[in-house]
Amino acid sequence: MKKAVVHAGMAGVLWGGVIVLPSLFPDVHPVVISCARFLLYGLFR
Image 1 (cartoon, rainbow, N blue to C red):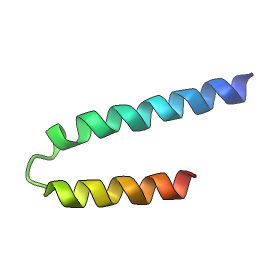
Image 2: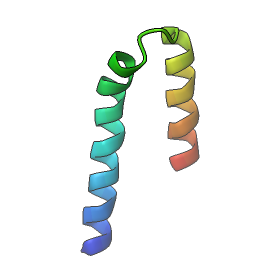
Image 3: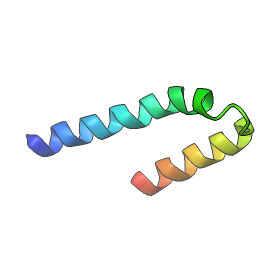
Image 4: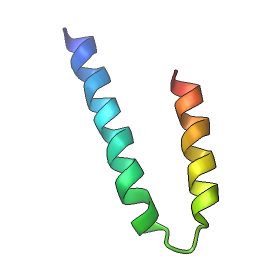
């Protein structure tokens, strides 16, 4: 049960990062952010 809660929290952090990250780094090109997202999703899968 605790493991599931930790995984749910990690998923929430990742999805929150998808929304917050572009506003924190406005100088980074959106394509670079998208590539980094896909790489991170692939690593965690």
